Amino acid sequence: MDGILQHETRAHMASDLLRYAYVSAFAAAHDRSPRGALEFPERLYPNHKNWSASNHFIDRFKAQRWNAPSSTITSHLAKDGHYFIHPDPSQMRSLTVREAARLQTFPDNFFFEGPGGAQRRQVGNAVPPWLGHQIAGIVHRLLN
Image (tube, rainbow, N blue to C red; front, side, top):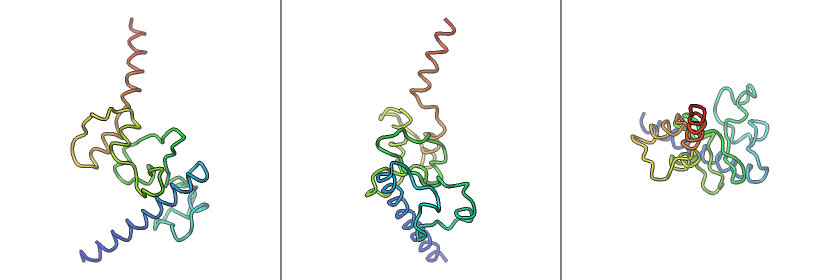
């Protein structure tokens, strides 16, 4: 049973890597991510019930772009990286914890604790430090 599960996991991972490469290459060529089944090759369709049944999840796979603001970093980063795909098609991966933290304006020396999933949740659940600083400045001015 373990061998079957490992094989399925490797196959799933390989298909995600191909999707990541496609999404980031599409974004580089079109300056946006592909929109669901309408702009995905059928052979790259994920095995999700809601993929082609509706257009509710047309942005399930999203590449960040070098020349645009990033997506809002959310705690969903801990579940999968489909919405946080690295912009370089040759890398075929989602953003690292450190890259996501940089987008959230955390300094590079900020330490996140625990395993990778916990670190991703910490980044995704956090108020970006620069935003917190800006809000604190406004509150300080209002109180004075």
